[in-house]
Image (cartoon, rainbow, N blue to C red; front, side, top):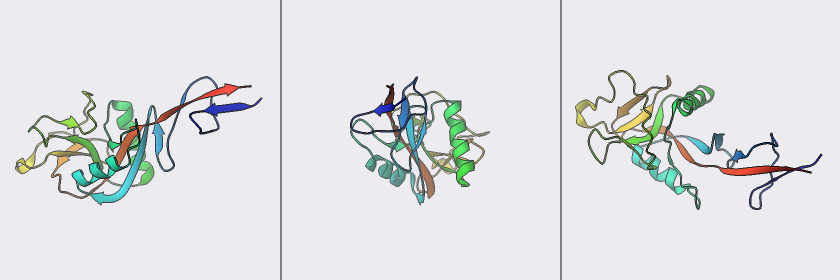
Amino acid sequence: MIVFCLVGTFNFHCLSETKLQTRCPPAWLAFEDHCYLYVREAKTFNEAETHCMSLSKPRRSAHLVSVENQQENNFMIDCIQAIGTGDFWIGFTDQQSEDLYTWTDGTSSQFTNWDTNQPNNAERNQHCAYIKSNGKWNNKECSSLKSYMCKKNGFKISCLTL
């Protein structure tokens, strides 16, 4: 049996012949339909978002990670544990409108995972969210330096068995 995987001009090995699979560039991790890149270098929230956007490709814009459901949040926790790192920026901010958090990638998800008594906007200058090692979210000054995770759409491949 020969298995071909086709997407544009790329060839990949398939793990399953019955469904489309998400593929990501080297160093990016696949989860559901998206690709994720953890960046250890600490940057401010806005610098991190700018860096993520610089990794965009046609039809695959990259931004700080948006977390759309509990499964994706659990994936973030698994990443934190596997990498052995502390907290990192996610793309959730109220910089545009006080107390109205939105995702930098425009995602309209209503899912949140704020830690107890968060967001608290201490001293009225905490406008950017990060995920802690326990998977809960907190807000912090956007000028703080943190590692971060970028997210973009993966590309789908289909397998053909001959």
